[in-house]
Image 1: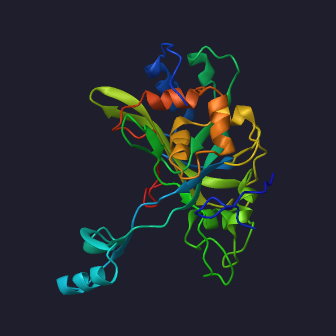
Image 2: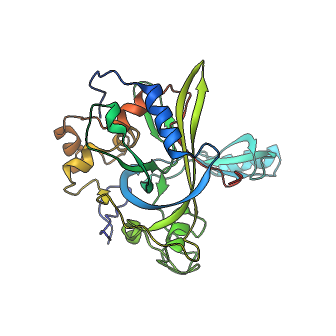
Length: 320
């Protein structure tokens, strides 16, 4: 499946949830069921396909940080040239102490993805009084982060749609995860451009993912902890997976499928609401029109304490 993804600038102009319904859920039973059924406590590399693409709108990313080796006088000179620049102590790419030059990042369109693993089928519905049957394990890229009670959880590391001309044409940076996924999916060869408007071509593509699912202890209670990170394209002899669920693309200014909107996890909805172009968008109208229904994924997330991540991005250095 390929979709025509909508691209827009910082002004929003096009360029070329709610809470649970009060049911008592056996959280320990549900979490143990997921962990035991998946059998991924020690982590593994699995083949899964990109099942959903969510437009997160225009987001303001974290400030840019660069290692700075100058003196205090040099720092003062930099600030004099650009008052928005500031300096702080931090760590370099090798986790060594370093002085960092920081600057605000410009707002830009961001997205995130869901990945399905049909080899692991989960019937979570039985814990919610839902007899819809088993569905593939679905994990969401980008992790989540607690922003306080007023906001809730949001996508921790959304994917920027920013393009550069480093490849000789407009394209994602070759170091960007989206670019690597495009190479892994054989949409392009390494070094060729992959422009933002082609991102919809990733839907349905099978890739290898590092996955770990276990229980995290917090103050005597155990919570489901799910981790996912991109690993590589398919290896020799590996076959792509035929999607078993309808592929989903939710955009800000399109007539989205009502069921797809209804099933957006709360941490993604909360992120969408923080976009500068959310107010007045079709998606805002659809979310309100759906009555802020809550999917199983929403309920599970809301039950987790702020200090326990429900899903995070795996570090490339993990030993699996």
